[in-house]
Image 1 (cartoon, rainbow, N blue to C red):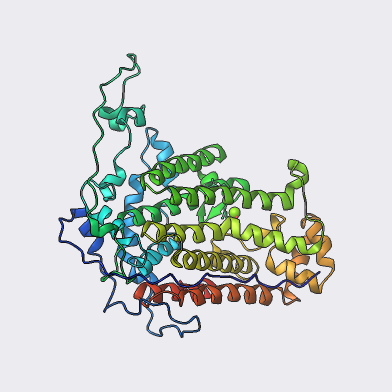
Image 2 (cartoon, protein in one colour):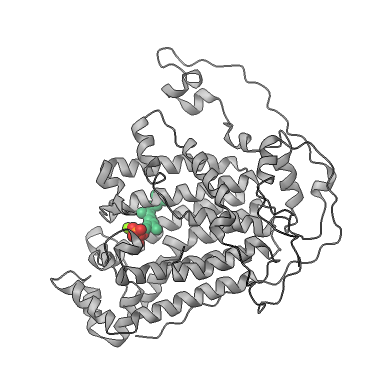
Length: 474
Ligand code: FPP
Ligand code: MG
């Protein structure tokens, strides 16, 4: 089997310098926009708008990511539940089920931290800030919740919102439409160029907070489906949704979450972000199909099982990106887009490279934990991957040292004693160490690309996360 080396991450050069700084005119801030602005996390002025050299040393006084954004994460979780009301209370209950158990909220945390670490740097920042703060410009939190079309068209039938629901007893009537509201034109300074500098204090836009919720909803939707496919009895140490509510309702609850996600996504009003996040949903499904194909390809009629041994590793990494890293990479890239970072600037590239490397490191460590600690760390019994027929990093690396592992992998650990034998071969190999080395290489790369961002508490917290995904000391 050919030795595998980690892919190189290329990040394009720093953005072209901009010429004139923009002075912000005094304008009336909406209450919500002020609330978003008044969640300070930054101690001291942001410095160093010019990207430092990539070998710069990390700041030793880095903040704890979860403490830094604790109020924002709690607010985000609470308000997310409001997005999940339904005419069918049982459906809401299942859709909310995984949100009610404590979770790391790693994906929303990444979105919020990257937003803070880059807001102010992009050429479109002032326009985004104006839209977030100006009444009627479409960016305020309450505007994000306002439906785009007639309430009775959107709600169809919802006993909780009877005043927004058209009765089915009579035929549907045509209402004279009201002329659409014209959004105010942005002041000229919001569209002009500016020198890149972080906002002070660091701030979040309402659209970025909503994006963080969207990313978590997609993650939870995928878990609802995944627990059906994997027949998982437990999630985070408690009964999984399929165990508690059955397969059919779990799948439908996942679909319902995606429906709510799509509406919230379109409300962000940014096509690039819609494309990015829609492609994540496709990636999640593609990743799951790749995984299914490696185990149940023949019985499902999925063509193209791996033939050469090195194909197994490439498919494993591809699947790892699609199932786990894509959501982190494109989620943080979308956050940076919402902050006004534009094509030709380096910030989107930094975000994507960070999220992709961090996500792959995260999944590789998850795959190690399945061998090492199992239930204590993952909230599910250890060895689950092997029992599902899955060969992850430790088994694939062990194959290079123990050819017998190849037979077990190819027959998907299906015979009596295969799982135990595979665990033993992994124990007697450097499979776990090499998987950890690979995770470390990706985590190091994630930290390295952060050197292109100006120093800030948010950047320090993102650096801390590159260590925690490997050490799992949340
Ligand atoms: C957990 O993997 C599962 C995922 C990260 C993604 C699953 C994706 C799908 C089922 C495709 C459908 C997607 C949507 C958005 C509806 P795991 O089984 O390795 O982890 P676990 O141990 O936490 O279950
Ligand atoms: Mg699973």
